Image (cartoon, rainbow, N blue to C red; front, side, top):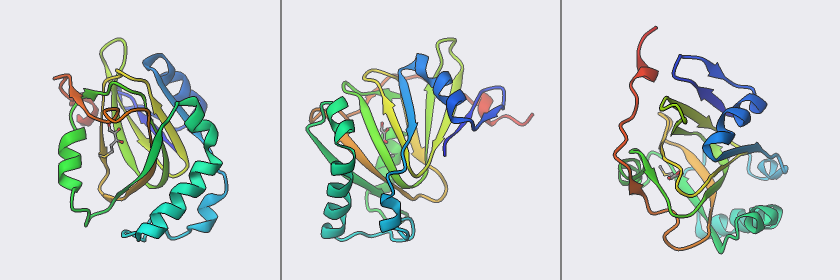
Length: 184
Ligand SMILES: CSCCC(=O)/C(O)=C/O
């Protein structure tokens, strides 16, 4: 389940409150447990997946989450699999760890591990959202955000694509707030 860290140091872990807080920013958060995790109980520990395992997991979730693809007019999906040995891990962290937008919405469903997202509120303050297994996150096109895996460096998610450039970042130059990291 997700947690939201506000810039006054408050941590919100009630899903309804987090949803209410993020909605004005163009962000949806939902939690789905379709039971598929029972088929892959060791997914977080299994860092490397074979091509047939990737396809199996993807096809299973594509059939369960057909409505997510329809909602997003998604043309295709892929399985993002990050782990400490991922060859492109540092590149991905450098690419997505600065404030950026995308020209298409960013929908993803988390299978395992955790990811931290940063968002800017309408009043200019910043929040950090931690998402975990079975969370579904939807970021509207053009919404400023950054993201990074946490210290475990483990993250598996199904990403949905509406067009080929959808996940290409456009940097906005907004600096990450350090007020979230100040001792209180
Ligand atoms: C650090 S890879 C994850 C990419 C991602 O989820 C995202 O939101 C990019 O904007």
